[in-house]
Image 1 (cartoon, one colour):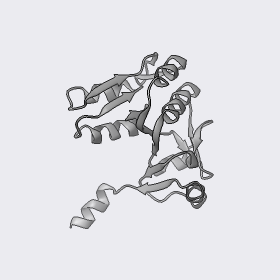
Image 2: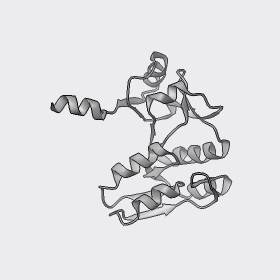
Image 3: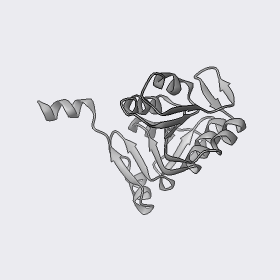
Length: 169
């Protein structure tokens, strides 16, 4: 499993921490630190320049490093989502790494909460149709859903804490 930088992918890593035997490749120092001491088979920290503000390893060295691996699952986050299906971010160096992660995987997953549809970012990671799965917390805008359906991308809506409480009450 390869995970890129971001607080959302850190939450995915937290969920994966209960698993055992996985090999995790990440350009996110926080994810690797979080999984230290877990029952993972191996943790692989991508090499390259570290962005000191958030522990992201970005740039061409990171892209080259990732290109040495082929993973079963890539999980990337995004800073913004466009209703037309664009998956976006702010930093071109970070986007280069996210693209490499997606390119070197068998199953491509983007995880982003619905608030990202209210934001805008200038750099395109990919299109929703380039993904196998898009995971979010509520139904995306109709054009986004249509773009996903036209390309056989499955949209998964996660269950929120509030919904879980209501179902069990």
